[in-house]
Length: 168
Ligand SMILES: NC(=O)c1ccc[n+]([C@@H]2O[C@H](COP(=O)([O-])OP(=O)(O)OC[C@H]3O[C@@H](n4cnc5c(N)ncnc54)[C@H](O)[C@@H]3O)[C@@H](O)[C@H]2O)c1
Image (cartoon, rainbow, N blue to C red; front, top):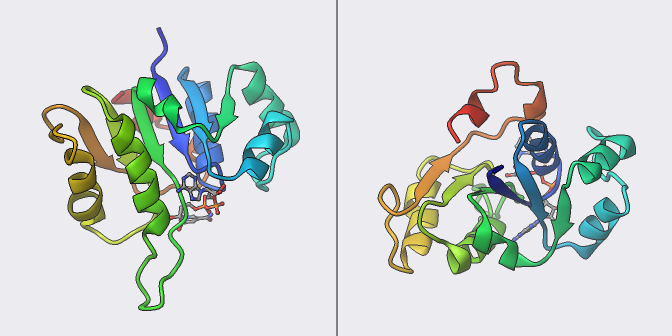
């Protein structure tokens, strides 16, 4: 049976990742807070330059669905966080969307799940900010669930090695 992957944040990073994962054989759901984004994708419209409407149609016919319903995380084998990290006033990344997405995952975290942070941020964010929120429910990273940071890569479907998808 295909592994179920939820991509959180369906923008310039998340959507190409969805495409790569669908092509790699994952059962992929996209989760976004924007009903405009979700409704647009459900009706076959791309809102990013790197994917055409016909490529969205291909994803939909392969079983991809987009939703604002966070309960899809309850049955996910893998969740990848691809939400924005705009610059904050102090020059560092504004982590509010990352922490909001982390809260969503924490509410549905279960044994064996792999959680990947892909948003651009400073070294240490995964361990110092994301991990404590996920572990607050009693599960331990590295023992009960898996936690990783994947440096953001635009256009992952052009990656010839496919390294990202072999470990799952
Ligand atoms: N786009 C690029 O060229 C690029 C390049 C390098 C790094 N990055 C990094 O990649 C990350 C994602 O950027 P992007 O360009 O894909 O952003 P984007 O703005 O294109 O898309 C982000 C999506 O996340 C959704 N979102 C926001 N908050 C959310 C939440 N809490 N839960 C679920 N969905 C949420 C938004 O509605 C939007 O659809 C950022 O950290 C960015 O800095 C992007």
